Amino acid sequence: MQISLGTAKIGMNYGITSRNKSISNKDLSRVFSFLKKNKIKCLDISPLYGNLFSRIKQFNLKNLKITYKIYVDKKKFSKNKIYDQIISDLSSLNLKKFETILIHNTHEVNKIKLNKTLLTIKQLKKIGLVKKVGVSIYDKKEYQKVSSKIKIDVIQVPLNVFDQRLLRNNWLFKESKKKNIEIQVRSIFLQGILLCNIKKFKKNFLIKYPVIMQWNEFCNNLSKSKLFNSINFIKNQKYIKKIIIGFEDLNQLKENYKIMKNSTKKVDYSNFSNKSLNLIDPRKWDNAKILIHK
Image (cartoon, rainbow, N blue to C red; front, side, top):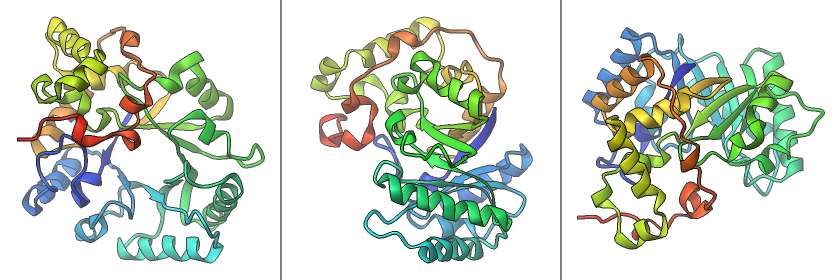
């Protein structure tokens, strides 16, 4: 299982529990030094992440395996527009190719546009501008929009202690094994919800979702941090190739890395699986009703 650095926080204020607007320039240099020192070679990037590209292009990215997530116009399909955007972003980052290109907004794009876009990106694969092609999804229905005639290489999915939708009936891993598809997982901290101090949640939110209090008690009883258990849950899963790990600052990145490198503890987290989309899908959150902001 490889670590892939989640970069949204570098380009913008990301995550409901975020303390800072974005990573400082000083910390950013230290982050890239840390990546080099510890041989972390994977980055997860998107042009939607604020000023990310302008901030990271100063670093040598050529030896990194970059997953690039492209946003597809929902209304109008343009093969040339997709091609031009990818070429432009490669150029702005001083790169000759991406390791992987994923469709970022699979949930918003209809089946016809989705598959046309995949075929366009696969043409870029033939000429060496990308090695792997795939989709970033939220649920199984989105994946089913991909034509059976199109072979994709990668699926990126949300997976965390509360959101275990794609583990039901072992679907995700059966699909990976059957079609030889690389699985990448994101949102392992549920944008910080899983790590948040229980005192920061609004009372009504805790009453509505008692699983949050149960999670807090579970981690305390194990004498292991929420951070440890959130990562350990992912490490307990089969077939995952890459884990996208976000971070609040350099210290948290170091702690994440340390836990990733430690041995996996066999723990059953299945009781924390929650079906409420209002909890597990950040697109449905009403932020004002979740946390106390002082």
